[in-house]
Every structure is written in structure tokens, then in C-alpha cells.
Length: 318
Image (cartoon, rainbow, N blue to C red; front, side, top):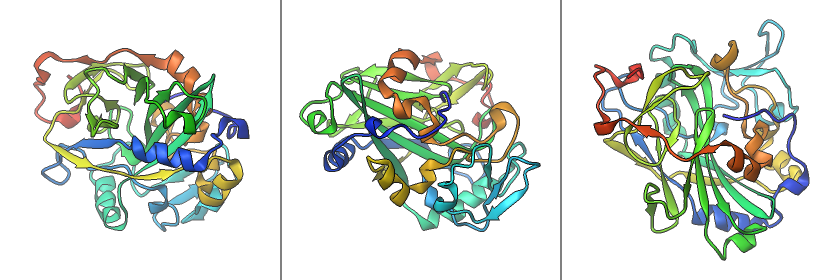
């Protein structure tokens, strides 16, 4: 999704006003519309954004080291991950390259224990303020299959801090899509909003790339290969709980120590089959405005009519 950062950003990269950041995050909390799944292990989206604490501390999860995938600890916790541990990785129950229905079955067991969640992060750069919402999924079922998946959207405000941002409105929005993002102005007709401030997000079935509208999108990249992103309904709408990331490194270590993890959120594999790194390791975490200026593209190509001749949308290849 972006370039790796070698450490958490300095304190100056964090916003200064916790209460304003929380108010801003609640005011613009996204609405997520997932492709509904009618049959277990059939087409549709079985995964949904969840809090990471749902998998941390679970005896079905292992922390493995960089040497021959040796198990360091079963049921690792947030404080365990706060050690940083570059080149370590988490391992979930299943075979990432041959998933069958394993991850979906695990997802259904986990679904009884939590409310869908998004992590909000506020950061300022270049005299502007960015509000990010991060979504964690346990599995990415696309051409580049891998355990763990971090996706996000970002709202840019013409304001120096979250207090000033509350007095205005976003100018631009960016939705993560594979190795980049699609941008839109706040008043763009393709951006749906609920009650004026809540952007509607359509995650693609399997890949969780975020789109503005329901459609069948054609795309390609060096990492994912040629394929289709399906965001067509019927939908299952969720209103995620907003968990606001603290605005100082000290508070992060106390409340969300997992954010300091420099390893991978998933099974170790070569290249793009490897589990992803977490939010704070991404370029946009500390340099959100730079990221929006350099990595957002203006549109995604929707196939006219949204028609695919595939017998099963899970095959992704149009």
C-alpha cells in the first residue's frame, strides 16, 4: 500500500489536541458497505474490519522470528509487539496460499466477540491536517493472497490542527486501492456521504481495495496482477466503532502498543504474498499530505455495465 517507515514518526507528526481529534474522527466516521455473502464459503465478502485485540492474545496466533520461522510465542499480546521486532511476523491459523475455507471459518468464530472497528489517526503536515481511518482484516483473498490486510481512507483539511479542522470541512478524500489511492474532492459526485459528513466506502470483495461506487473495476499492478475489483451489491452495511489512536508516542505505547510492531501482520511468504506491515510503518502515517500529493490517482476504470462472464466473482480475472 505504500513505502515502509523504519520507525514511528516523531512527536511533531502527531496532532496536539486529543479532544478535537476525537471529535473530528467521530464527526466524519465512515460507513462501510461490504459485498454481502449469501452462502458460507461462496462468493461475497466474509471478512470485515475488526479490532486487532481480537487476534492478539489468541492461542491460534503465533509470533514467529526471522530465522526459519521459529515460533517465539503463542498468543502474543500488544506489549509483546511493542518491542518493534522488525522482520518478525504473526502467523494465523491456515495456509495463506491455499486458504480453502479456513480463514472464513475462523472469521465467523471471531465475529461473536467484537464490534467492527476502524482506527482513526490525525496528523498534520504542510499546514494541513489529515484524518485517516484504518481497517484491519484477517485475510486478503485476491490474486496476491496473504494473511492480514490493512486498508485505509484519508480526509484532508485546509487547517493546521484538528481544532481548526472542526471549523471547516475536508477539501480532498483518498481511498486506498492496492499500491496507491483514488482521490476525490469533498463535493465530487462520486463520493457518497451520509448525513453530510460520513463518507461511504465500498471495499472490493476479497482485496478490500476501497472504492467510491458499486461497480466492477478493472485494474492491474506489478504486485496484484491483472484482475477485477468487485464492489457490486447486494450489500451488508456496517457502522464501525471508531477507535481513536492517541496523539503522543507515550500514549500510544500505553493504549495501542501493537502500533509499534515493525514486523508483518501475517504468514511469511516471498514478495506480495507476505503479510503486510502495520499502519505506522507506512509513508502516509507520518507524511499524509505528501502521500496525497504523490500517490493519489483521479479515477478507477469501471467496466461499462459491470458485467463479468465469470461463474464465480471470487476468480477476480475479467
